[in-house]
Length: 362
Image 1 (tube, one colour):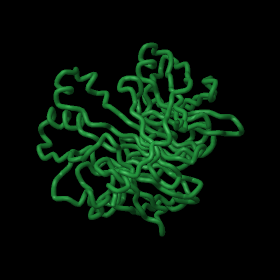
Image 2 (cartoon, helix red, strand yellow):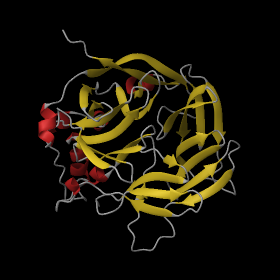
Image 3 (spheres, rainbow, N blue to C red):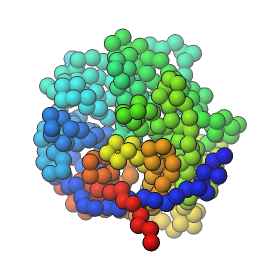
Image 4 (tube, helix red, strand yellow):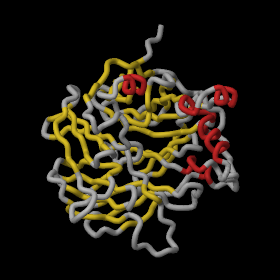
């Protein structure tokens, strides 16, 4: 059973910030982006991210932080992509862009031309429950051959197949996978607990899913492997975000701010480990004492799993120091946006480089 695994947990590794990655922003860009990606393209290490304020993708060198390129996209016309939300760079001449308003995925090239359009929510028989695509840093696209995988949700509903499998040649979409048994209860969870997060291990073709109300992670190749592993936090006793009065906004907001929550799994291919981000519980007293702005900042930890999904560490993050929703992994470590450093000077976005270190035993 899982609890048995929890007690066997060995604290062997930690994450320590060792240095910063800093990029200089132009007047159109802020530190916030829903979609960021690290790549090595023609031996050039770089990051790319979407600027939702001016419909662009920016590309910066890593680790220098110099602006290398900016792709600007039209809203309308034959090469219009609507309002850019997220992106996925396959190579510099094949860039996928997702428009959150129309739920259309566009394939574009380096001259910002639209090569192909894939509507992700149109043309289905009405009897099918269509997951609303959630494509961003925390749920990146995965492309295997002609198949593109993405995840989607219906807030408040777990009786659907949350993974879309899009055939890039034909445009056909099938829906696969299921929510875990944790969600088969009669109660309704808080709407945000129906979100779904995943990462992908390209070395072993494994999709790793995390569901907010479940301490386990779920590992599958969407074929013949389908298993789960304990990946809970030592700071989270039980998650019970049951919620029925959806019209009560302040109660809904408070429950979301103070309840524990299991978030994003991240595969680190350079160290062959996985990280799982969490929101840790806070007390009602803490919540009542603070302003809405500071209550925006949840308390987080990062769980570390080895390549066999054994839990080998857990690190609490300083509550106001990092913004855990914007991250990427490089050879140096896990890069997480530093919130306080990034808001004190709007000309820069600053990332802390978290290095995996073995805990020294006496």
